[in-house]
Length: 224
Image (cartoon, rainbow, N blue to C red):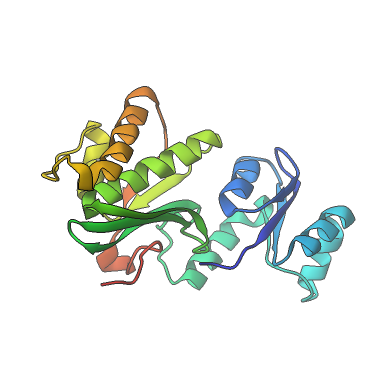
């Protein structure tokens, strides 16, 4: 799991300290001349918030602070971030990437969503006793959509599963996994996810991760 970071927003929709990149982006995306910065500890973040962005930015330029971000340098920062991440510039770095980890198919299934830019874990679901890769991928996408809708974000979601993406579009799953005592847990989650899709709208782009061109998706469990 990525190391915890604390994001200070001095100028944004709601200034303050946020514990995830997604929450920071919610406060700064589309905000003119937004000022925000990441810190490694809560204490550093609190001190930076108190002294203001000008002093904190000056400290960063002098090599005594963390990474700085502001909307005035978005284009340059975006290209630099893409280069640092090793990903091509067409990848939307301000996004959530989701993936599944499994043992057997059917078998134990877990999933998570991470920041495409930083790899920071945004959410994760603990192991489910029995399911399939595709159902896990489907649940991960819906979880990301629900997470972002709750925060009023239209952030992009990446998945490497065309099957799961098609199920999202159809609002239906096509699987041979039986409904029995051993699969009750995952079917309960799937039914809940389908209900969410049928009762909610979203405008988040759901894009296919190009594994061949870009390498493994950032949420990959590394079990291949």
